[in-house]
Amino acid sequence: MNIINEIALVLSEATGLTTDLLKGFIEIPADSANGDYAFPCFKLAKELRKAPPVIAAEISEKIKRPDFISEIKVVGAYINFFTDKAFYAENVLKNIIENGGDYVLSEEGKGKTVVFDYSSPNIAKPFHIGHLRSTAIGNALYKIYSALGYKCVGINHLGDWGTQFGKLIVAYKKWGTKEAVEKDDIKELSRIYVKFHEEAEKDPTLEDEARAWLVKMQQGDEEALSLWKWFCDISMLEFNRIYNRLGVSFDSYAGESFYNDKMQAVVEQIRQKGLLKESNGAQIVDLEEYNMPPCLILRSDGGTLYPTRDISAAIYRKNTYDFDKCIYITALDQNLHFAQWFKVIELMGYDWAKELVHVPFGLVNLGKLGKLSTRHGNVILMEDILNTAVEKAKAIIEEKNPDLSGKNEISEMVGVGAVIFEDLYNSRIKNIEFDYEKMLSFDGETGPYAQYTHARACSVLRRANVDASFKNVDFSALTDEATIKVCKALSELPSKFSEAAAKNEPYIVTRQIIAICQAFNKFYNENNILGSEENTKNARLALTYCVKEAIKKGLETIGVGAPEEM
Ligand code: ARG
Image: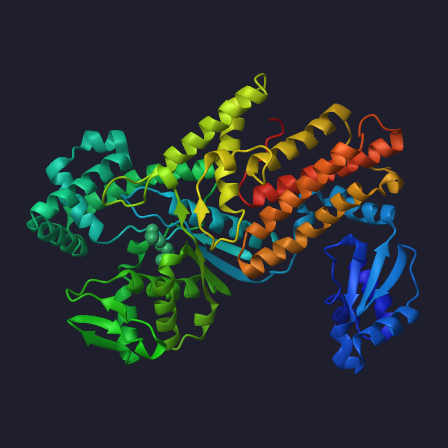
């Protein structure tokens, strides 16, 4: 049974208002001293034209207390409902026993389509930690929205066109070999790319050569295009290695080059709307009226730009997917870029401009590890970061549990999971201080802590050798404070999915996973599970099973693996 619906029904009988209206007002108090559910009467002050505390007192007098409610207390404007504890626990746990981790699913987004543009690294440049943030946040949002019933489309808007290719072709022809590129893929491509910049400082004619190759690419020159294609394939090898490790995939890999043959018509449309203006030979959309610098549409040589491709891509996506929302996940240094071209879409007369959402995130401070510049070559590669995290995880596991079987796979899940979890633990706009020791700690608010708690629950269930149907469990023993707190944390997880989607903030789910883990570990320390009397034991095992299911589902949703042993 849905307790909120039942309370709304009781309130409806007392007030004559509809359950639908009342349901939306019922809250779960942060402090359980204020009850398990609360009804804030100031929401009805307008409707009933009375002071909220008066309303609270009047309603509470009229309420017929149902059996599952043990007490109703009025505190100021609030009517607080205390559920019968064992009944409450049973109600929460039965739902999870029946549905497993899928108890979090809902139909909130049914019939709506959301497009996610995330990860989107640049070909022939290394996949760096900024791309990791975009990948982790985008993947988590994709899965959170999917759980809410939205139809999701994940797009990797690969940076596979632009000036860097002219430079790379020149660099390859001067200093590269096929063998070296095949052997070291992106590392070799970055090496020659860095070399290009060093050499071009001494000899600026290299820049002219690069531009000439870019023009050849644009004109469809066979040699230029086949090198370009080869660089793309080489880069995808590395990107896919990383995506496999992160467990991420996309519904579309239509990158920037995909829009090459679609941009002319879009530029024409912008022109016809009277939005295009010449400025120093380039074509721009003036945005002074909106307090922004102009949006660049065509370079003076006629070449298209990053915003031109984004505008074309948005129109294509609207036509192809008919999205209700299109979400772009990038670092906050692209705020202006998105604000500018979203405005251009609006000025073009598209009312769906309001469905475009930029979801920015803060920077990663790698501290002593180094900086993120590709041009100078001192970039930290994502693969190296993952490798280091996994090695460190392995050392910890080696120390804590040397006999564990499948150590390699588990270290991989723990190391990679630690990096992702840390990324998703705070409001995305906050900068991250990258710190291996902190993210790999087994008792902080970390991925390994959540994984460890999951493994602990699995281990209890393994030792008890239980049948997961939990058919005839008697829940009456589940009344202590620690147990009820676990149930409360479990019951809140589905609403955290909604909240996370509404704010595009995965941390809301990540933190609830930690809340469940903390509540469970407290329960675990205070209660004997396997050594208790049969009924109590079975009820506690049922709770342990529900915790395991919830943590697993939560971790899965944010893209972190849940090993059964560690
Ligand atoms: N390739 C860009 C970068 O690495 C990110 C692209 C984001 N998506 C977009 N539609 N602009 O900075």
